[in-house]
Image 1 (cartoon, one colour):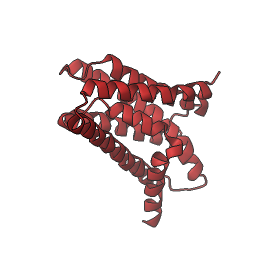
Image 2 (cartoon, one colour; image 1 turned 120 degrees about the vertical axis):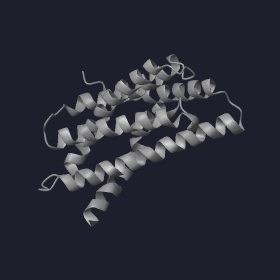
Image 3 (cartoon, rainbow, N blue to C red; image 1 turned 90 degrees about the vertical axis):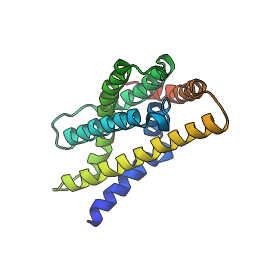
Length: 194
């Protein structure tokens, strides 16, 4: 049981590490267009992301599917910029079911990419371990808990900025998305695999 908690803590630290800010940027971009009023959509996207993220971890750890780490390291910032660009293009004020389902599909694909990104780190951590399931469950649990923390912080920031400071949601989403793009573009350049 102590080992399980060790891996939960490891998952939490891995995502919340400010030096590994790419995952934080992606989750911020994902949550930016939403508010506490649209909690059902946030919950749907977070659930899809969590499921596909864990699926990729399982595929990689049990070597069902192995992807070159250099491609994953490049695709992670691409998913961040793509999500932020989607925020700039897509109007969140619409109650269009097609828009949210497209967002769900893309979030699922991006969850796979991010899961494979974590899997390389995780496989190094459990090298030589016979039992992979308990550490995998703990690590995935820690990652998912940290993702909930990040999404809640973004939603609270949105609430404060939009309610207390009376900034329009569209401006908040636009400024946040542009900042995320500007922070992430150097990562795309640095990780370009060719």
